[in-house]
Each structure stands twice: as structure tokens, then as C-alpha cells.
Image (cartoon, rainbow, N blue to C red; front, side, top):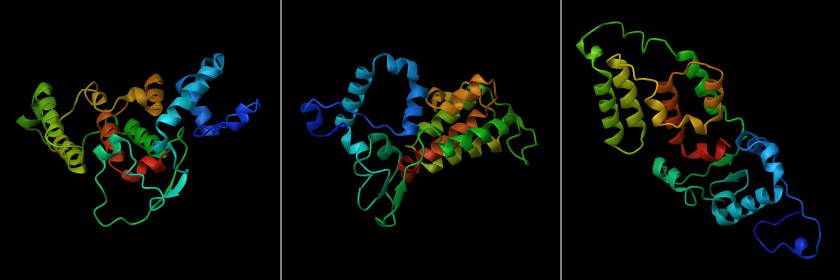
Length: 223
């Protein structure tokens, strides 16, 4: 078997080298590249993996099941995790992380399911009154939402403020607005819904996705 981190003695002995890949990861490769593409040049595919693992070994070294006391995920986390997730305030208590399937991410599947069911529904049961604030030009609404997002770093309050403003004033954002803040091309679940012609409540989906990104444990547990 290949050794990605140390001297590969088996290869130096002239033995045939095998590369082990998790079944879910193999399916993930198919979603990203397609098995037909990667099989055309397996050597180039393997070299890319070797370079990536050796360069980013601190990010990918932990076992799929690990305690935070044994492997301090936060200390070795990628920059985007530290940017979105503040440290736990109530002491450094130990938690167990158990990685799930990277091809079936339940939280994202749940969010896209709810978002497709929520499309076209009124913003709230109490939002049936009409006033001048409900008729603000959409350009002004987008400026206000931009201001909320740009006034503070990622945090639960920013998400809640956005949701509250839209519901309180019965404002609707154009479908083209929210995908700028949560790139749907990166999510299989969103792409599948788009290809199927399914209508999506982008406001709900993007806010739900931002909530997930604020959960430190979610990165290790989601897959």
C-alpha cells in the first residue's frame, strides 16, 4: 500500500503500489470529475492527491473519529473555520467528532428540502398587513441587507437580523441576490434542484447554510 507521508519502501523495492480510497470519497470523485475523466490518466490523478495530502497534512491527519482533546481541530483548522467560528467560551471541554459521508451531508439535504418546500409561501403568519415600508424599491432593500452583512463579521446575530428585517417589512429579495452570498455551484444538492427545475427559497437556504458554517463541530462531523 502507498505511504503518502513518509518514504515509500514498497515502491523502492519495486513492488506494485495500491492506493486505498473510501467508497464515499470515490463517489465524491465521480460527482466532481467523473470516473471517466480521472481514469484516463490515473497517474496524474494520484500525483495530485499525493501533493495535496503532503502539503495539507495538518488538516487531513486526524482520524475520522477523534476526540478534540487528542486532536485540537480548531488549532489546526483552515482559515475559513477560524474566521466563522469563535472559540467555545465555556472552557475547553472535550467533544468527540465523528465524520459522516462527504457525499450525503444530511444538514445540507435537510436545508435544501425545506427551502424547496418554503418557496412561494408568505414570510410569516402575521405578515398580512400593508404599509409603505412593504413597497420599498428592491434596490433599496438590497442596500439595506448589504449593510447588515457588511456591518459585522459572520455571527448568528447577522443572520437573525437579516431574517427579522425581511419578515417584519414583508420584503422579498430577487432570486439572483442570495446566490451571491452562498455559491450554489459548490453544492451538489442545490445543483440537483436547479437542474430539476425545482424552485428554491434562496433566502432560507443561504441563511440556513450560513448557520451551519458558524458551528465549529459541524466541519468535522458533516463529512
